[in-house]
Image 1: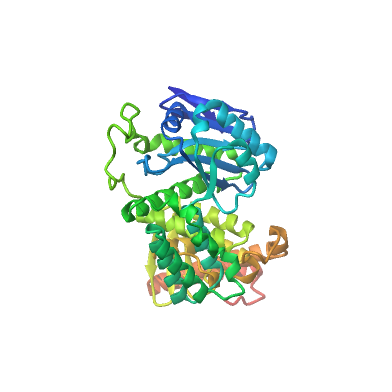
Image 2 (image 1 turned 90 degrees about the vertical axis):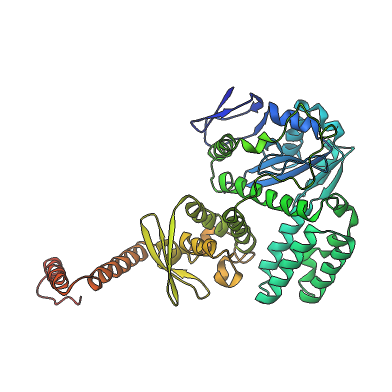
Length: 456
């Protein structure tokens, strides 16, 4: 049994790591690669289709996660199909070439890779094709789906139109026949303004080679496949994408894998798929509704907000995910309580909250995100102020400007204290009110002076 030291934490692995190199003594990692014996054996059994997913952290470092894919792979649980983790030194041609070369050195089965699935933003395709010359590189159905979802949110479409597009996209992805893809293509042409249509790259829907790599799945299999990848991407973003320290992020990922061994339990190397094929509709435990909702919220943040805004809000979302929150609703406001904090959330767009984070940054805070999570909703463009909208700002400093100041700090502290005092005075007996008011009167006079009547 191997014990891996990450950021001061011992991470127990049921099988010894095949590769763990260039781990620095600082919280940041210049380069990192990890593969357990189980991962190596899994890839050796199913090397035909390789799925590559990328996760960025606030420092700009990227985690490459390799997963096996294809008809022979029946593992659908979160992280169950992961065969390799890597953080390249730099995300350039040289850095990726080194990363792929290390992977190939420890995995002789790489020569049997036939197809590699990547996201639409993967720009260094020449490096990938050079390192895997016999493999065909295709866009993955999952990443195309996420790309189109993000564009639907960015376009600020009317709610009924957005709902129709999202529903049609989900239905098409679960039954990616040529006819259904053509119908979705036509729907996009009818609903999206012609000036914005090129942004969606709708011609991908008509590239039959892309969908042949996905079409073999039944509707039930496709639904489980997308849900599983959604939760996988969410887990990686939650643990690695919300911390600037790579060691801490990877330690969290390893702890999750250690605490969820069932992801690997359904695969046995003693029985090959050809000898004992799994039933096509046999599924592991499905991801919870809460996980899917939080994943959709996270995606809407990344799609709508600028990079700095998304990172700030993802930090707030991480608090929501780890906290108990209570919601009491009224006619126009919702009271959100996370741990010991209680604040008022205004439902009308743009959404607002009485907490310091929202007042200072005018961004969706943990309380607004908790409300969205509880209502199974996602961030909408009109809930965000214009300076934070994707494409409108270039840096965090230029947006914040003078918003963060000592005067604002004092003003918000006084405002919150006044609201709390007012609440306590309203919810007490007349006798208690007189006593509290008299005490407050004495405090005000002794602090400022009896010569100036203080308005309470």
